[in-house]
Image (cartoon, rainbow, N blue to C red; front, side, top):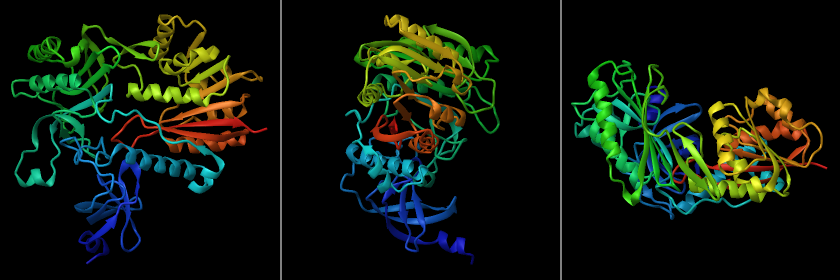
Length: 483
């Protein structure tokens, strides 16, 4: 009997001590090997069965909880154990944030070739901030239609069928199986009402079939729900395969009519529906606009700044969290009446929110529609000291400052961090403060190294929990020029 088979049969107790990748619990097996256990939070003692070794870590299946953490909480979601979106619903909010901050500090330190203790000695680390609202905070969610669903062991034992018509979220590690979700606890009640209507209309046997990513057949593909928290307006994106028959066109029209006549809680209202046709085989919500009912945008507000958001415009997924994030950026800025270079500016939300702190705002973003939105948002709010450029930041380095001026640099790059050419250019750029917003804290730590070679020192770290119940946390680093 080989070692792997023998290990597969091994059952033992472990204590989860930390969060690993994607919020998976990390423990140590009796023989010293690290173990990943999905859905089990830190400070839990659990009986597990080891399964296989992958990328240097053993994966294990939890069998029973022996000791719950002191900060345990009953998950609110009915499919919590199967859905890969929320991994921390079993912990109270303060414990989630403490665990996520520890993981983020470890990731940043590791990327900087430091221990966490060494990082804490060199950098002022501020307590994690986050809104009090732990559920119903997402202003945007994307769901996937599917022809097969993911079932747990209990469902398998009862003989529930795999095949059918489903709408929900991808099971962890599965592109072809959907965790069928009647509702999502991270979105508002009006958004869940709209989700229920889509399910009632699109998942019936009389409706066209849902998409099968293996055979590349079917009609219904994705559903995007977007909400303006300040306005109470909702947008819906329907993504289908190209309509080939009158019956498919009629099905979309019936769904759009049902959605438009929905009576939503809290006097919310549907601003519009956008129907996209996607002829690719890739599993992404994209396509060409086939039809629009109503208008393809909604209103949102952060503080005193109003925004007009189209169905595909980038905006922070948590409106309450975004305000707190931008307020934290304001706290991190030490001076006023200077020039702001807002790199990866999106629709300009950071610069516009902080516009009173600066005499001039220069934004750079590669998506032309986002730049157009930024210009319109600036004009709509009467903010005239802005200049926006539609370009990849790495291809617009000539726009960065070359001589000493009273200015601030803010970068909010994608999850992968800065392009190396951008990091090197920023390392050479003059200035006395650079603010780095990271949705993936390890990227901030990695980019701190080329910035340090140019004389920038990471002096402060803030963490903002935009996404309770998930493993995600935003980091803000304040870099200062060394004298």
